[in-house]
Length: 86
Image (cartoon, rainbow, N blue to C red):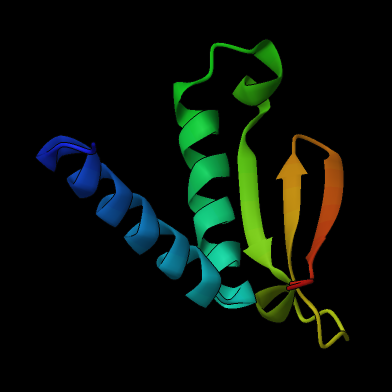
């Protein structure tokens, strides 16, 4: 039989799954931006000393309907598209 703690954990997992199902591309874009910025701040990797700048496609003026990020690390530039599949 399941105890009270198991029921609470199942409820918490169900709530987290529900929140994940409601996550939009814009929400994920913000989450990913924050994760990259935190990683850059806390990282001891020498490449991060060059500085990291994260900009959304929208703010960068890219001509696309996709959500995404432009990530600059030193002189390198990366573009990450965010497309929700389900």
